[in-house]
Image (cartoon, rainbow, N blue to C red; front, side, top):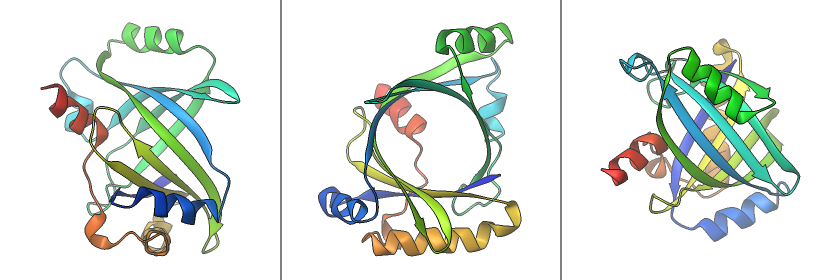
Length: 184
């Protein structure tokens, strides 16, 4: 499946949050993301991502292992995504290290997730704050087959518009890149 996703910088987070809360109840979660690569950086060079994410919420803690392939759409950066839940975060880290991967960067994301139906699709909108980066971001995504990507991205753009996000607010900036730059 392809994660058809667009990300934007949010200039009025409270207004966007109010619009989202008209659609769904927020799930407040804190993500602890750890990204891995091969020692030669070849995953990053190929535009791929390998991540262990531990999610802390009022419902408890869960961990997922994610691999994202190279972008299949240059404008949005949408990528194939494969994800599975893992029982033990430390064991997942140990397995990846045992396979020769190295930890590249780890950081925290504070998220408000909203799941809802829009334009006949299941959408996930996430308001994101990364303590090390200035500003608030909004990600809107839906999972689709590759042949549906263009139509899905149009639907995501429409939802962003309904939330008060314009084309000029869109960004391809990555959290990993921004955190790495901040850390110098």
